[in-house]
Length: 472
Image 1 (cartoon, one colour):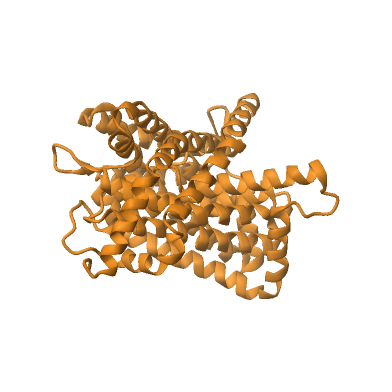
Image 2 (tube, rainbow, N blue to C red):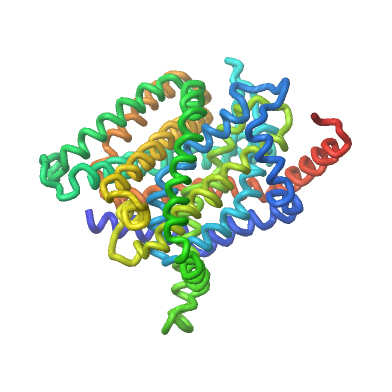
């Protein structure tokens, strides 16, 4: 297993090398410039659209429900465990690069949502389908269909083996185990390894609950997400705000550590050593940031395509708010809490870093603080499992020509992946997730760059009509 993990690490480092990071950031910068910094100019309007549904729009679910479905997939372990692993590997500076990636990622997410609605199609059952595979095929042209299929394949694997199932259930069971049985005093031998009863029970409960909702399809997932997602984000953000306010005197030094870490300004860290610090900080921040908000991955536009709207730009603006909420708000809160508590520098790994930040930062008993984080992580990860089931199901549908027999079988394969997730190592889980995220992003980024002119033209037209009062 150790040799296998070493192989995964090398593949991960290759996929998430400098070329892909530069490509993703460059795409965000290009779209930011071509839309004249829309994420700054129209953020207020976008937030208003987020909660006000369009009248007379065509689609399967409301714009807000589509956003909540997308958020259910993006607000997950990346916001708690992902931020912790990024700062643990790249230091406080990783948070800075996470924010930079998110700022330009908002423009990327906007373009994804816009193109998803513009190029969506209606299947023989009357369902609206969209996402990167359709805007690659219908936007770039039929000769690019191979790229659309490549995206669908990587998206399918990401949902089944990476970000959608294994990473999420592993995070849930790890948090539950750390709370209920941190000393691993109650164990049983399975598959040649020792596992706690907590891990097994938590894994079974989450698998059963996920199965009950997944079988109901997009409308049941959207209905669940509309209620749970806003509530869990509010509870988590309030918890982080309590940590920050309770330790407000440490904010200046925490911000200084983040900025210094981002640019390698550390004692004895000069020349090649300083470059290595910056490279690791940047790589960790960008990779984990994208894992969290999924800007550039092409996943959220699959949900956006189902939105009840007739205006691609409007839905693009709603989609953009997902990155703002996920990273600019939620990940920033997590990162500040971790840096202020110094939890990243205590030799801890994964979720234990964030648990330590909550225990040290919250003015509550340690057990209560740990329980609160465990519940937040559980809901975050559970909704991500649901959202990614829909994403990967759409990828499979595109690859197989929407044959129902494959979709029915796949739901149970997806549920089986959830079931086995708790029994894999943390390192392997996160490396799998990173690899498939990177492979999935590449075809999508190529399409976004190729269609950036369409995005710019649609944006200009919509804003002109809005200014003239032609749009309510």
